[in-house]
Length: 169
Image (cartoon, rainbow, N blue to C red; front, side):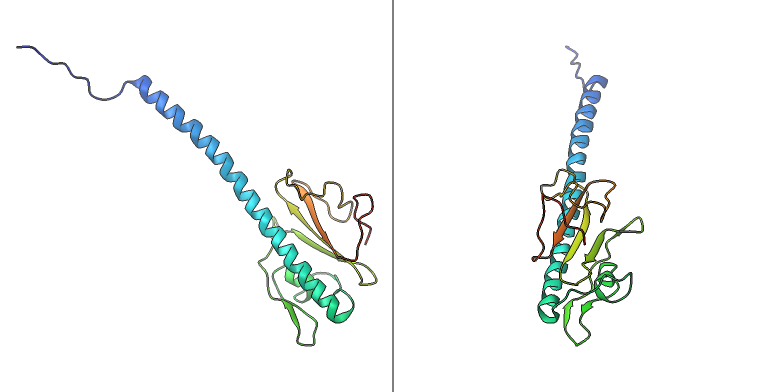
């Protein structure tokens, strides 16, 4: 009678090759996941800035000036940015309701600046992806400093860029 010798299982080398391939695929996919998370947070910031900008323009159309940027409070634009209030004109007109708080490491991620005449505004935020096409690298000047990523700004429609730089508020 012939003895049949069957091998069951995998060798150590085969197991190491498979584990290595799985590790490489995991690291490649994890990097893409992190970048997609950054891009989605950047998209949310841009949408928030656009919403605030639209509300500010409506406020301007009704009142002839943009709201002041006086400090941190529970009303006005800074209260809205800090997630503590809504933007209204005190006459019963609500321009935008409470937004999600945009803070990171206890630092304000959105900055609102209005001119001394109240006729123009600037909104700034920090995008995490420095390769974003919407980045205004260097355009934010000393008004809004960015440590990582890049500066993204929206300005009032009646404000002109000069040489790619934002005018001083």
